[in-house]
Image (cartoon, rainbow, N blue to C red; front, side):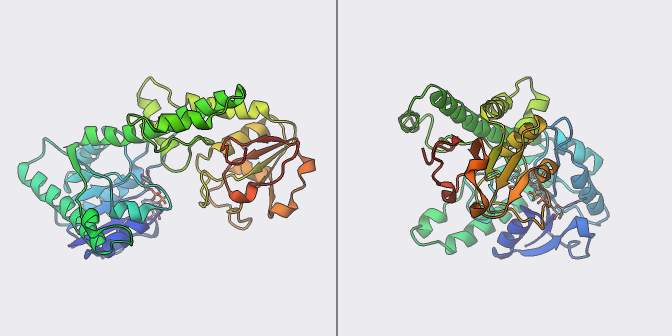
Length: 376
Ligand SMILES: NC(=O)c1ccc[n+]([C@@H]2O[C@H](COP(=O)([O-])OP(=O)(O)OC[C@H]3O[C@@H](n4cnc5c(N)ncnc54)[C@H](O)[C@@H]3O)[C@@H](O)[C@H]2O)c1
């Protein structure tokens, strides 16, 4: 089986690596660098290019379209497996504009740092297809997507890691096939549910902290309730990164519910507690990644700077020579290169934005805002 992978970014590279390690021949194409001639004879084309958020929060399909346009030049009808996240209604619209290659929508539920592992052993597989398309096209395409996942999952079963039995690993995850719109909605709904869960735990923690109530036993009890479950049940500083917050914004754009309210309220509440000179420890959206996209603590910094309050920050992932993708307002804050550079006496407020153990310092009588609750 041969699959071409269009898009060599945060998702495209690890996914191509997994396919390559699963007895699949891979043609890697980075459309940003131009199209090579390696993909013409592929059995399927995996499209994993960015779908950036527009001003209104909806995802924009321009890059997906440019790949589909390119594929229309081929003299075959091999299926497209679309892994980029798109808005409900997108696949039908794209297919009517580019009818040659049947589109199968198979978005991924992975988090940065664990993309390969999650793609190898997904909890479930989601496939959206054209329920009105021809039976032959549907069967051929679904078979092809199925074969791709089968290869990945059976290859990962043989590379069982210690502690995992081969039997458990070879279990095929549930597969959900549905029409395009249901699959597009399911992807958005899942991430929005997770974001809502995080917003909720942060809200309860915020209430407890304001009222001087010990929140830890509250969460211990909540986690014991099977209908709630114990994942995504640790309070923190709000979500960010390339998926959850952006998917919230997208759903807000097409429904009447503003699910971002609670995250925005938390930003305002933190800003209102700050003194005149603030030190922020950790600015990325989670530990051990360089990404600051939709980082919640960056929203706080932006608001503080808007209010004319000076902000200094330290982050172990910060590279002064590579601010690629970091928001402009961070450049207005002063970056500290090492923890010893800090003199806490210079600051009225210290915010712990990312829970690194290095930040477990003696803050004495400093006004410390640590919504991660790790050190208190
Ligand atoms: N990163 C994640 O954790 C994650 C998780 C789930 C879903 N997704 C979705 O996957 C898609 C890709 O995300 P990503 O994080 O890999 O993006 P990315 O920004 O890392 O992708 C960059 C790649 O996109 C390609 N590209 C750049 N400009 C292009 C252009 N003009 N035309 C075509 N291709 C171009 C290039 O190959 C480039 O390397 C998005 O729709 C995203 O929502 C990402």
